[in-house]
Amino acid sequence: MHFKIGDYVAVVDDTLKGDVVAVTNDLVSLKDSEGMVYSYHPSELVLIKDSQFQLSKYSDIHNPLLKEKMKETTPKKSAFKKIKSEVILEVDLHIHKLKKTTKGMDNFDMLSLQLDTARLKLEFAIRKRISKIVFIHGVGEGVLKSELTYLFNKYPVKYYDASYQKYGLGATEVYIYQNPNS
Image 1 (cartoon, rainbow, N blue to C red):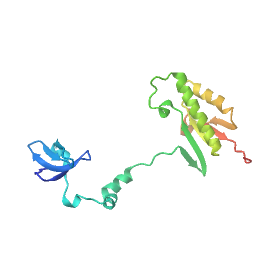
Image 2 (spheres, rainbow, N blue to C red):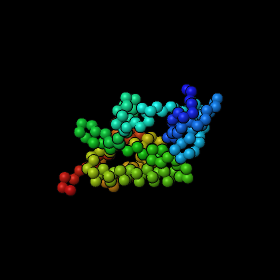
Image 3 (cartoon, rainbow, N blue to C red):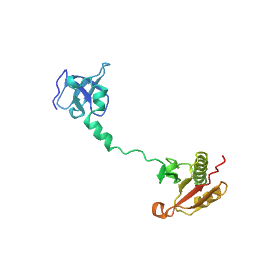
Image 4 (spheres, one colour):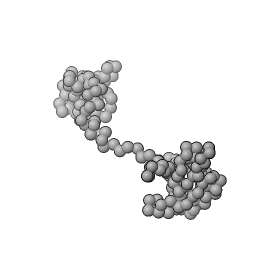
């Protein structure tokens, strides 16, 4: 695109806008509202016409391209699954799902974090009267699974292997007994 001095332009990947003050073969210089001058390649700029200068929020919201982009976004996956009006809480205990990095953590620290997360989620489900939780722990050497078994024995729950079809061998489903008197 060819720009001329006096054009009002915006930078493609930035919030910067301004008036063109100089044009050379491969650079366009623009001055922003604060008087700062910046130089960009012409492919990095777009011309803002008078009709586009002050777009209202209403017109931005009803822009067909924006509507199309909004349709493409996928909703955030919930940790809760509803099956036949039954709420099931899924908790993935894989360490990379709990922490971004395990730098500086040894196996004991990682196992402690996983068990603390399981305990907190289990107590949350008891408080909120959620009857089922699926703890996804993976297969591994079975250390986490055996520690979870020890944890579950301290609560009013029944636990068993989760659906093999859905989770494979690395998940345990916990049924929480609901006390109707509390």
